[in-house]
Amino acid sequence: MFRTFLFILLSCAFTVAVAADQRAQTKQEIAQAAKDIAELKKQLSKIQQEKSSAEQELKKTETEIGELEKQVNDLQQQEKKTEQELDLLDKQKKKLQSSRLDQQKLIAIQARAAYQAGQQEPLRLLLNQQQPEKFSRNLTYYQYIGKARQQQINEFNETIRQITNISEQITEQQNNLAKQRASLLSKQESLKTLRQQRQQKVTSLSQKQRKEAQSLNTRQADQAALNKVLQTIEATLARQAQEAHEAERKRQRLIAEQQRQQAEQLLDKQPQPVAGKQPQSPMVSTAITHNGGNFSTVRGKLPWPVNGRLIARFGSPRGDTRSKWDGVLISSQAGTQVRAIHPGRVVFADWLRGAGLLVIVDHGDGYLSLYGHNQSILSRPGDMVQTGQAISTVGNTGGQDQAALYFAIRQKGKPADPTQWCRTQG
Image (cartoon, rainbow, N blue to C red):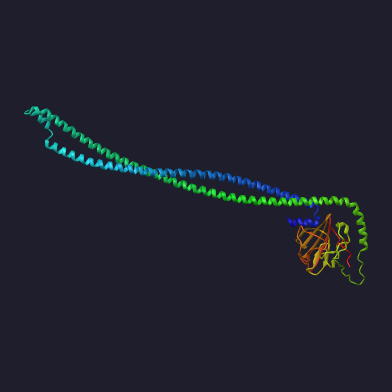
């Protein structure tokens, strides 16, 4: 874009129109930067919302994991308590089993005694009336023995039932604890996996957020730089407007001066070459013949930028005969210092196609001086230079066959003959 601007500068002499175009283009770039910044901020807001949501999900998952850890801890405590209860139940079971063995032995003894005594003992007492006074007592005795025997049998059966019930309780509690532990461990693994996924999501969003924030900072820096460029262009436009205003006020006075200068130029015309002789290229000199002032007031008094000979005049055909020189070409030794012809500001100092290393100096009031095909550049854009100050060195860049300086003057964008502005060549 900057090189395109330089081509416009060469054709339009850095006029208000060119600066206005630059201002419009810069404003468009600033508007685009603002649009990009708004979009980046929108993306950052969206990422922040997604990150907040992901963090809430992570918080929920980690809270659930913490609660699950508490449940696992409670289950472990319950397992310890249950193990103690199981130990008690096991002891009780062993005690009941021991009691069952004792009862079984006692029942066996009673069964043998009853078998030996026979099953008709009460009936014999009833039929044997030899001792009637003992009948009632013996009958009661046998009834007691039968009740005790039945009670022992009932107690034995109850012992068997309690042992069976305790065994079932032990098995059931063990099964329940195993199922509960398996469920908690499975849920714990699932939550750990979910937490890892959500943590990765939060990390990814954080990285994306940092990247978008960096892009936003870069774009904001671009916008700030463009604003500075716009301020520079605005200042240039204001300065040029002021110069145009001053030039308009001086127009009438300059007309008379220009008429006088035109008369002087007629007197300074080069004599025609004598027939039969080859014309010799005129010499030019850097000698200063004026004491400063506005560029328009020193017409015909300006020094040449280098000492040398004119090998191409203003308006003469170029080598390809399809165009004419819009300046002059001065033959000089390579490395010779090129000097500014008048005070001004360097507005361009870079390589340009067709002109090689080129320096352009703005002298105000729409006047520019151009110095091309340089070997090196000794000044930078923005530098203020004085008359006779070295700004470059003679070379042959830009496709030139020999060391020579391309020198041109622009007046409000139009080429002007340097021989009408610089002192009469020798």
